[in-house]
Image 1: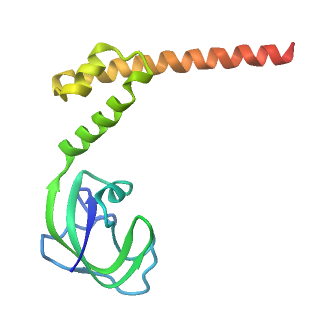
Image 2: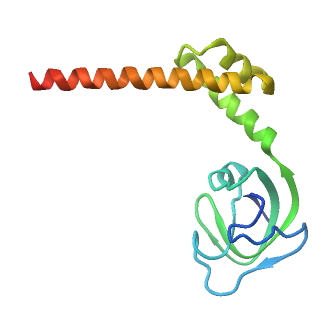
Length: 153
């Protein structure tokens, strides 16, 4: 059994419904990675790069299979098990942000949200982040404008 991981949204990329667990999808014609075939990845982190949604499935792939470093393209694919990975993905994103929070003067609400995941803080944390980003971008633009004036003089 060839197992892989596949992220998906509410429908397949072509708009058709996601099949129920255990039902094989199959394609005809030549397999071409990124163009034609049923795709998945051998590691969920690789599958995340191509995620059109927050649903994660453990899939079996079968038939002709093409491989690249971070994905496979198969003739047949079926879902073995699926989860809504939203909470897991948000936790991962918060942990990544916490890994670099020391690189800026984060507003307390941002750090509190990242540490706790408290959804009541999410909107305030986002607003604080947006304000901090806008201030940084404005300062960066002002510095660039100042450097342009120096090069003209």
